[in-house]
Length: 291
Image (cartoon, rainbow, N blue to C red; front, side, top):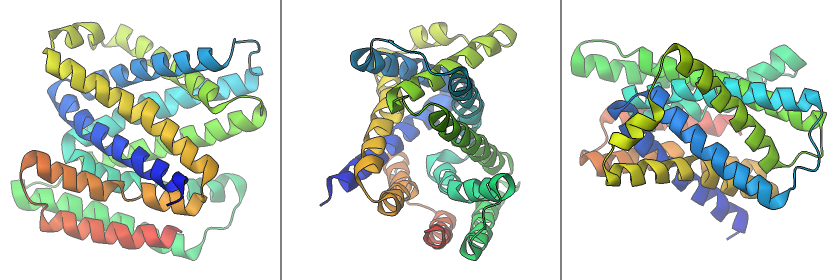
C-alpha cells in the first residue's frame, strides 16, 4: 500500500478517536472549555516542533502573519467552538457527516470570490447534504417529539467558519511562500488562544480550575485526545497530502463518519439507528459526487 494512504488512514483514526473524547468532555464541561484546552495543547506542541526546526531567524511578512492570525481566530477559535457544540448535541458521527461536505462550501467560495465554475455534480451533492440534515433533525423528532435544529446548524456554522479559515491560511502561504506548515499552524494557534483569552475576560470558562478538578483518568484521556486530534492527526494528514494523490487521500479521510459511527456504537453499546444508516448512505452518494 502507498505510504500516503496509511498516513491518511491513521490521521482519520486519530481524529475520530479524539472526536469521541471531545464529544464526551464538551458535554461534561462546556464546548468552550474543551476547545480552549485543545487549542492550548496544540500551540504548545506546534511551538516545540517549530523550535526544533527553526531558530525564529525570520518573521513572515505582515500580510501573511495577520492572515494566519485571523485564520486561527475564525477557524480554530470560533469555528471549533461551534464544532464542539455540535459534538455535544448530535454526537461525533453525525457532526463529521456534515463536516465532510466542506468541499461544497469551498466550491461556493470559489464561485462567489474567485468566479470559478461550480461543477453540476457538486450542485447535486448539495441536495444530499440537505437531505442528511433533514434526516438528522427528523430522527430527533421521532425520539423526543421535537426537531433537532441547533446541532446541524452548529455543525454547518462550524464548517463555514473552518472553510473561511482554510481560505485565509492558503492566502497566508501564498503571501509568504517561505513559511513552513508547522510555522503556519503555530501562528494560527496563537490567534486561537488570543481569542480565547479575550473571551475569558468577558465570560470566564475556568480552564485551569476545570482541569484540576478532573480525576487522573479524565486528565489523561482529555490530554491524549487533544494531542491526537490536533498535532498528531494534522501531521499525519499533511504527510499524506505531501506524498499522495489528493483525491485518493481526501476519499480516505472522508470515511471518518463511518468509523465514528462504529466507535460511537461500541462506546454506547447500541447499534446505529436506521436514520444514521440512511444519513451515511446519503453522505456516501454526496461525497462520491464531490470527486
